[in-house]
Image 1 (cartoon, helix red, strand yellow):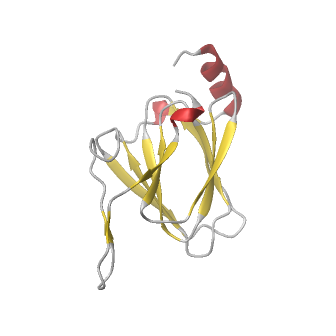
Image 2 (cartoon, helix red, strand yellow):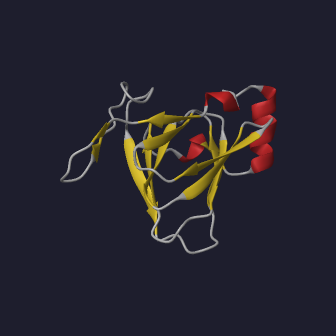
Image 3 (cartoon, one colour):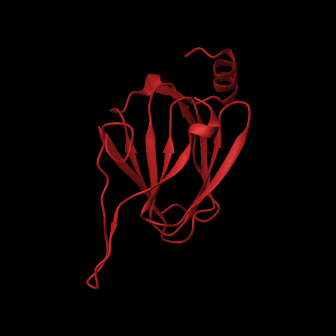
Amino acid sequence: MPLNDCKIIELPKIMDQRGNLTFVEGGRHIPFDIKRVYYLYDVPGGASRAAHGHRALSQLMISMSGSFDVTLDDGYGKKTFHLNRSYYGLYIPPMIWRDLDNFSSGAVCMVLASDFYEESDYFRDYQSFLTTAREGSV
C-alpha cells in the first residue's frame, strides 16, 4: 500500500467538565479488528524505536501522553507525522517501514494492531524491505 494510505484518524472525543473520554472501535473507527494492544514508555532522551516494517499487519499509533515523531517509508518516499494528541491516531497499513523518534519526556505511544505478534511478519532489515516493497511482492 502506498504512503498516501497512511493517515491521521480523528477519534471520537466526548468532552466533559470532569475530563474527556476517547474510544476506538475496531472495524468502525479503524479499518481492522483489534487483536493486540501494546505501548512504549520511558523511552530515554535521544533514543529511537521501531525501525521495522510489517508484511501484513495494520496498526494505529496514538500518543497517549507527550509527543513523538513517526517517519513512514513505503520504499519510494517518506513522510513524518508528529503525534501529540490522544484523540488522533496514525493509521499505518502493511508494507510501510516506520521509525519513531523525538520522544518528549513522559511520552507514551499506544499501538493497536490487527493481529497477534508473529515474528515472520516483520521486516527487520531495511534493504530487504526496500527490495520487497519495490518488487510489489510480499
